[in-house]
Length: 423
Image (cartoon, rainbow, N blue to C red; front, side, top):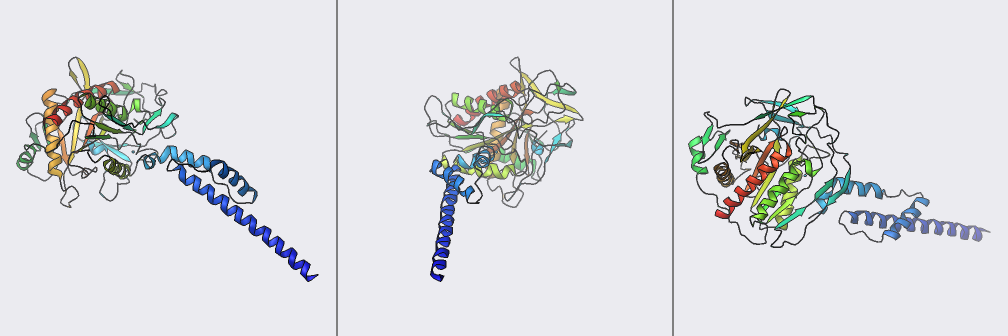
């Protein structure tokens, strides 16, 4: 009798162990398959789904594949594909970004105030959430496009006209911190003497551009969702925060125009549309730094990195659109931002970046007088230690119509190409 009880107990124990082993195997396989989703290499999907179902029968939690895929498409795309003045932007150090979520924007008299930088478009519908159209370069294209989204227009509902837009053409300034370049101006917001800065800026930039099928320029967007007005009537909807995931509305579209213009001039370019500021705005520069480092590792031939933004300028509740007429068309005025080392060594090669910035300012303003606002030279970081050709460029502001910024991108692209090919 005792032997029968013992045998029965052993059978029950064996059955329990077998169930546990099967549960462990199938659950582990499910987790392996889920982790492979992040590398783009799913394994044994049929077996895993069956195993996950069996796991549920055995009271083991089923892995949430739908959530993994959703999170992958919405937040992790940058990990799988190896996001008045720039005072609108969040401050950053090499270690971390500020947690600042508001924007410091310039008023018409050059002063500044704060404006909310909250992004309200994180749930915008998308057609093809991630469209990686990277292809081997050909002499015809000379463009590598990475992580360009296919979102639908998410600004169609902003039709109210309860806010005013004012076009302003910024003209040359006269102030103690203004340095006149060969063409255009530089605004010195550092403690360095104007004369010393001018000596640095007057030397030619040392950037050796090669006209071949190797990428020379990277265009990216730390504040990827910064967008423009879509109705050119000098009014705006006050509920519109100036953010959009649709590239046709945002700085990503401006970057695409700039990239095409460089390619048309024979310069190979990488354009990355990875989103860094949605759904979370804070630490955008930390995320964009990681992505730029990945791309520089992928394409070590890149010598110039341009972070394309748009400014946010206002006078009270009136949004300012910096604009100028060039050849009968309205162009959004642009502003170049170059960081200066603050004595801590975070930007050891800032002089080289400054030479490039001053050369580009001179070239753009010489080609199209009035297109630029003064180059901002200040204690800013913005990941400009990654190359000696790293700059941030503001194309217009929130009040500008997007076609005005696109026209500016065409003009700047031609000027940049002339400068790079002359080096």
